Length: 106
Length: 338
Image (cartoon, rainbow over all chains, first blue to last red; front, side, top):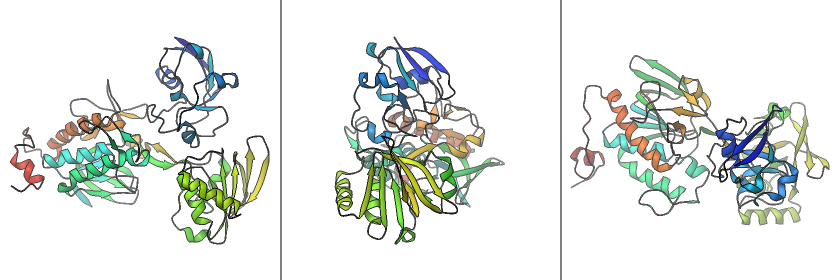
């Protein structure tokens, strides 16, 4: 288990334990954290699990695979610290990861 | 009025195979889809990407899968209604009346919703004040390119649509192409072409810029764009085009009284009927315990839903289980000559 901290757009903070090996997207869906749609189910084929990663975590994350940046072009208000949460696999290294969920996904 | 046994909503692989299963058991159907072609997500999201988990097909692309399915349902002469979105639903005695966005009406015994994650619609700019220009000086798709002649056009996006239109319109218009990063997701040859045209001064390329605001009264006059590092620019624009791909929305189906859970429709696993008798849901749009969002699951769901439709379409007949290898009736329906 690793702690993942989700800040939702309504200024609430949800701290949940996510099983290692699941993605940050799945952690949000399974814990009913609002604001992550994940329309395609984790296939990097939509951009509706978009999150903003807290700056200090950015270089600790797995690097973007081909295609993630292309999908982020289509996200709602992408920024430099944007990631698709379906591409972030939870591990010990990500214990304590903080992400902000945008006001909407589309 | 189009009278048929079953209306299938969605022309993705699941909807297409359900049409096949309906045809085999002797029911007629028509298909409505919001896109301009059959194939659904396979064609719209990943036409060239290989799929490796279609039973008995070690590898095929989304496009090949769609072509094969269309080939497979050819004997049934299924009528397609593309570029149409279903809107209204009304029950008239034992049948359903459905109206589409383009005013097409159907009279059917049963409905199969194979809508994927909803209908595809263009993604839009996130700034509120730009909405009022939509359809006059802001567009998310191009129907008549002649209106852009000799005008200044600002195109936003980095995919094939943005690049292709930038190249095309640069022949007759002044084109600004604005994209949020240096990399593009469109074809490399188009990226090179855009860069050449930028060097020749035919296109003005702004990378690492995003829209900040829009200025204009009745029509757009200029757009303000902001660089990653904070610098802003105001560029004159008669028209703004946004190409940010598509999003999927459930749309009017939400109002039909179906049990909806997290954007999916709850069904039973016996025949994939919803809480409303005569309305079935299959593929990515349906949910039940253990649901897998795989194309092969959609095929199975479509086969059972088709049989579920039978009692509504032919209440006085009994459906017999048959194999296509031996059933004369099925082979006749397939147009097989012996």
